[in-house]
Image 1: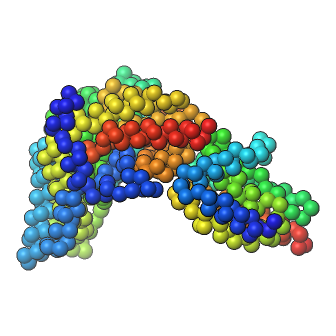
Image 2: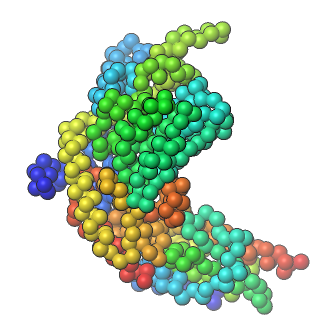
Image 3: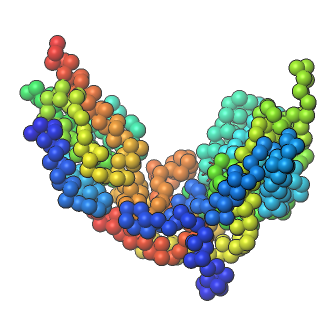
Length: 143
Length: 412
Ligand SMILES: Cc1ncc(COP(=O)(O)O)c(C=O)c1O
């Protein structure tokens, strides 16, 4: 699936809920399903600054595809769910597609105060980091 | 007791005075429990602001026209109202500021830089708001003074024996919070002031959280300086008060230069105005100063004691209800508290708690509440804090309890 197909899928899933709390529950559950990140990857370098809670993101290139790992401190389940959501959309894609992705699903799913608290909590920083991985790996490829 | 409070205050009637309370957030009626950050404003205060701008907006003191006179009179009326509110001896002891932070900075920059030198000691406490830490750190850095810290015990009380040990002839200034914004603790400021005076130190009290809940009398306290913010006592934002004893203020140099604060300016020499004006450079926040009088009247009409009794009832009720919840630990169990209840939920990040409560229409504050050293003292990153005002109800606390149960259910 392309990035946009995944985004459309998520928009459809969120359409099932009209209550903010249900959407939040869905995100929390996504976080619970996110495979744990090895402790060795939870480095300061991989830490996303600008989050109230600790969040880490890492990536690796396999067969020309970028795979993301993410985690948060165990108590910060919403942040973890959000990382999970981004991993779901961006993992397994070509680096240049990650770098150029237009993540239109975020305003569309209507996460309400999650978006604002995320802004404070660094959602933008998470996305920026993932795109930076995309750019870095597409540069290497072009060489 | 409960019925006496109910007789004295008709909360539903009071709620009708606050237009902002009557709205839904995420489809649920708003519960506003972030009063320690700022309180909501009654219609009378909103009207006072409108009346000023609609009827007599003008720059004060210098004008000779009718509107300027009217605005000046209202502005100075507010000063007298604050004087009464604090029971200050002289109206000249009331300086209008932008808020508590501004008042503390005034004392640090004017009194501090004039009278403190290398090796002098300043005592603050572990439970200070950053605005009562950073100005002193800046002063210490510049002047080579030393900052000493009164520790806090497990309940959230200041350890007074340790305070007494810190006091010496080197102590020049003591600056402590009257009521902790993170814990709710009411500090024994009278004792703190008396002890400091014994060694000849002056005392500043950060009254940001106390001003709307506790009866104030700066003469009885014998406070040298007392700072608070209007926005925390049902008044407008961007306006505050610094009280200072006349003899201290007279001896202090101004720290901001400009209009209003001068008598005469030539390029050779400028002579300064008298207090309070020498500390009020530039056009002040006239509208908000005018409206603060209405906010003080609102409090006085209800009666501070009556307000405090109602808030204390809410605190006792909330403490009992929240203590029933699994994994909830209250941070701050001092015997004397205002209606502030800070807590942590085991295994749940305070940010998540805040987001999910907000989705249920409940406004609380999460994080370190600008008291990071205090959070470090308790070994936590932050808390969730519910803080009460006169318009809150027991029903709203029930909503909070249900909301927290929902948080639990969603996370576990
Ligand atoms: C105890 C205490 N001190 C100082 C302040 C600073 O007040 P302001 O931001 O109005 O200057 C606050 C506000 O949160 C406070 O709670």
